[in-house]
Length: 206
Picture 1 (cartoon, rainbow, N blue to C red):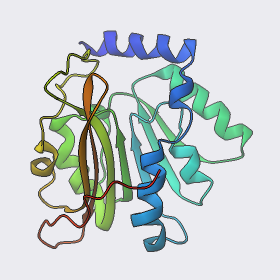
Picture 2 (cartoon, rainbow, N blue to C red):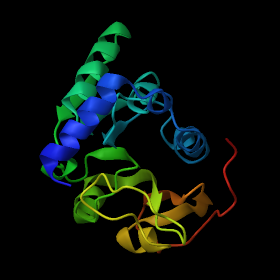
Picture 3 (cartoon, rainbow, N blue to C red):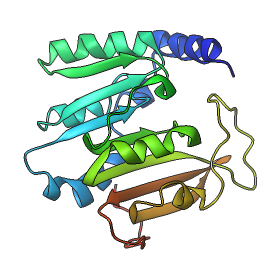
Picture 4 (cartoon, rainbow, N blue to C red):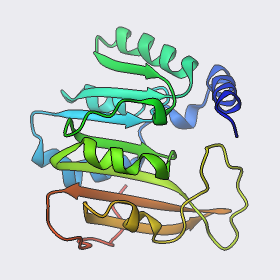
């Protein structure tokens, strides 16, 4: 799907309203509280890629995080800007495709990627994390019965593929499972210079 078609698709979706994408994903909240919160008690810098109307960005900003949001939908970014003003929260907002965002090396303590996984930007995502920083990711996964519609420029991840996409991160959580007619991968990695090892495969509580 081309950039213009994807942009138009999501603009229409956000104009119509997407209630399911207005509340923080339970996996995000659980992963943040279990792995990230104690490491950054005073907040830090975060990047939310394909952040939509800010379900995770606003949650983080309320907890003293300095958040940058990138999303392909101008409608979503406008709505997020208005919501942030209402809540007196400051966000850095960019209405553009994630591939066009200028990643600054070593800038973020946390990067969030939910249902937008572009293999081409993974090296830049890695470089943008500070040492000790975390990546929290949830994405569609090819499963035996997966027949979902592809709304991004890339195909859904294959089983265990995410582990090879971030070789510089220590995997602290990794879970893959079928959900209805598709698969889902949930992943937390940390950039701390140690060799990759899976600390937890136990489903988070959410």
